[in-house]
Length: 205
Image 1 (cartoon, rainbow, N blue to C red):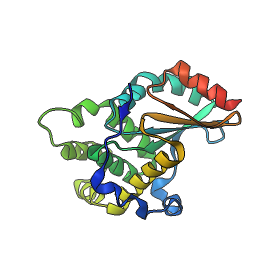
Image 2: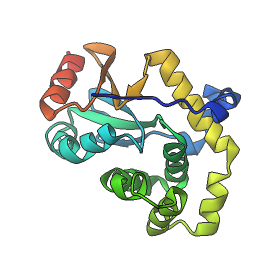
Image 3: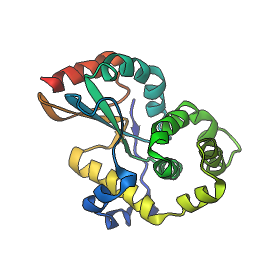
């Protein structure tokens, strides 16, 4: 079952302010990926940090996929933000502001502990994200500045809107496979290692 997107009504109107060209020139939006840049297949995962299905994929399947498909040079995996709610958007903003080498470990930590910072009872989710950010080396003063950065917020939402229009992404996790054998092959849901490898092989041609 795929978690459908919950609309961010208040912020989406501003998302178009940052163009694709502007995002491409911003180092914050360089590709965050794992795997060899020369791999024949590129897989883009559109994910939300509050999506239980994204967390399940990251915890249950990605380790095996990484070992058998990514580390062997068959494909590389690129991470793209698709926040389903304000909490996910806040977490995505913080992740993007960390040093590039800390991005993937940070989002992996958030997905692994999602039940504690996003869905636990009687917690302040912003404070919980701040605690996680502190462990990644971001002081609270910096954190407060990041979550108030409207340009960063708009850039993430613009990328999300682009994914909807260009690739028809409407749920998370969604994967786009590109290689010699297939272009923009889209699959959604918690892909098992077997299914992931099948689509990589199809994209490889």
